[in-house]
Length: 309
Image (cartoon, rainbow, N blue to C red):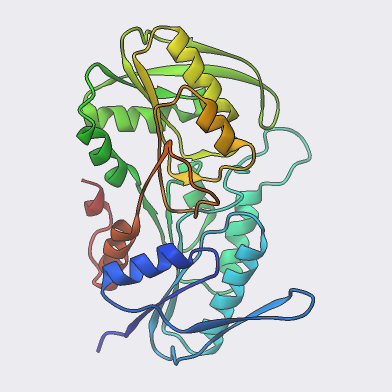
């Protein structure tokens, strides 16, 4: 007999978790998060998970306690004799710290990988890691989903002519080229130089965008400084319109206001991170169906890569 599947969600992803469970065809499991007076937390499952295949849904965007909450959930499941404990982490925090880019710094993504494995996680399912090679930090199976499976159809529905995809920096060229390949389109690159994190010193466009409908491709937007400056630059170079498609809308202050004031026609994003405020320029596409299909394929031992065709 196959183990019963149960899906739970942490406090950071309640809305997306409910959508995933509904798309899978079940209700969310009953979970309580106890808070002590000093804000220390303790999750507890209000139903049996003994012998079950459990999926725990939680994005680990700031604050870092979202990660701690998830690790406590895994530990509670293991101690309650769950058959397998699978983490569904739509957004993996600290993934930008994937290498030593200067002396005497940590590799945050590796630290997070170690923590996830140390509590006994059997499998990780995530989406659009900042760097694909982060999968190699884990010694457990990692299902790396591709959000363009969902965002590309929306872009096609816009029926834009003379479409060009753009990378906001050199590091995003591979991601941009993969999206452009879906449309048989060309790419351009914005080469930027930073003074420090979230602060750009200079930027230039490599490629011709005159008369084109430009779509920037990136995995995340934090303060929106880069994407808004890049959008302004391509419009100055003669682009007809400019949009951006991303996966993870961190949107730290002053991102929302920057986007409202920018030349961007719209920012296309997903719901891996819940929005703190409404923004008429932001179009959100849910990944619930994609994650639900991936969970089903894990349970039935079918291909995950088949979802990206």
